[in-house]
Image (cartoon, rainbow, N blue to C red; front, side):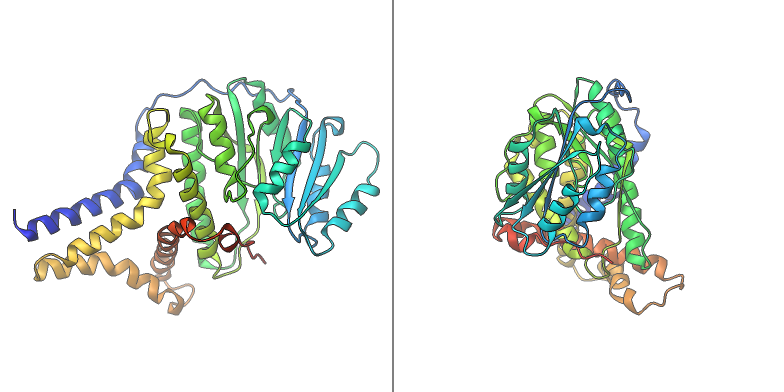
Length: 387
């Protein structure tokens, strides 16, 4: 076999890998009649006791609104406690929590404030878990408002003894930039894939601002953990429980500032790299959803490497018209992404250049995610900047 044939073979391999991750798996997930687990025995009359645990760092602008949304949850106050763990906040966060708790009216949940030295989110969650007394842990973040019925729907799923953790749906408020609309499109795909995987058996991670799990299944997190919403649910999954998705439990998120999407995706994907390295069972037969994991979660990290293989192998093929045409097709999305900023809003070309830019940003973030193995978590974890 000649060198040119080998190069073309590798280019085809990279192309097929990218095609499978981007289109092949979604089509199979949609078209195949896959085995489904029994429907979750959700019971809205089920009311287990719940401990809300939320880590906060310098959240003075958001904490009062979040406490109000937590107290407005349609859930019996006597079955609910709210544990706020301040991660070494240097603003008025703690004072505002104390004032809110001091002025709360009768029949509102008990509010507990833990003031911790700066140690990161994982360390704060560990403190919250140690303090929690109730059957279910409900984890949320300070930024996202919750629908009043959110906790009621999450808790109802624990009437099914096979459910170890459950996540709700985060709705993205519409932004005024094309990049936000493109991320919204990507998020709708993620929600659909989660729904299908939940029907088949189980998810691999939850949405950090709205998920709950049995307290008996929660284990202390390593202090440098970046994605508690993956590590904690996986503990339930490998203990034989299901991690499911309930779209009736809703949180709202606001648009990130334009130009900050790379850091946001980098943080998330670096956390995925960390989880995969620390949970080798994901790649073994112990993972009863291994095909879905390799195709979806691992595939998200593998995608830019398949593209790089395709580009490099095509470059290594013998010069000629075929190679020039192939390279032109392969690099056209990069060119579209590069000119996106110069394309006026409303032009038809924007419908191609804006998604191309988002695709490029996400794959650049996935490539960069391996930095998790050399950079400290404090460098990777930065708060999302919003409007």
